[in-house]
Length: 122
Length: 106
Image 1 (cartoon, rainbow over the protein chains, first blue to last red):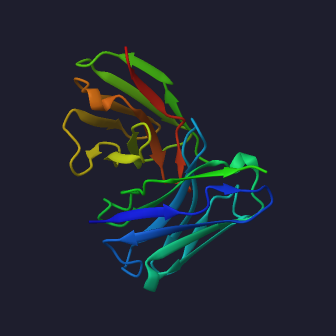
Image 2 (image 1 turned 120 degrees about the vertical axis):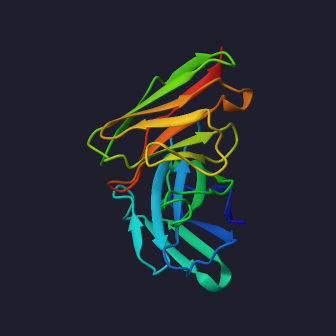
């Protein structure tokens, strides 16, 4: 069974760097075709894609946030890490990670983790 | 960026009724669109992919249609657990989501 779980600080101060971890199980980050994406959802707003990392370490970033984001993976720890620099209160959101592969199906994002709420405030 | 516009923003219906949700793309997606359901306090769940294919375990009352820029999600005979927010999602150019349609109990 494929599962993902996000973890990270619940509260960060403006200008700080946010580090989020997605711990996966039920699949391998080194399996051909596998990817893990990060998304966020501000309170009562729509979903926004942030970044995606593939099994071969190829990476994609949202054009509007690419200067602030870094996505990495640690296959041995079954983790995908997203860092976001210089956070602002507008970055307050629930952050999700999600799995994709040919079996997702057809590389659509599924399933998703439960999400972790991050509040940016001084 | 490809913009996805969903309508209506809110749909007020009674259990047993049919919900028709719309998603319009700013450019052709060639059928490459998915629908997600999000219940309160939960993560999104994949319902429909490739415009019309149901994901594993999704009931037959959920159906999708469309191909170029106009897509529809139909929920026949609404069950209590179907009252939620629905998002359309494209991956033709990067990844974007529509603003969502909330299906609420009338």
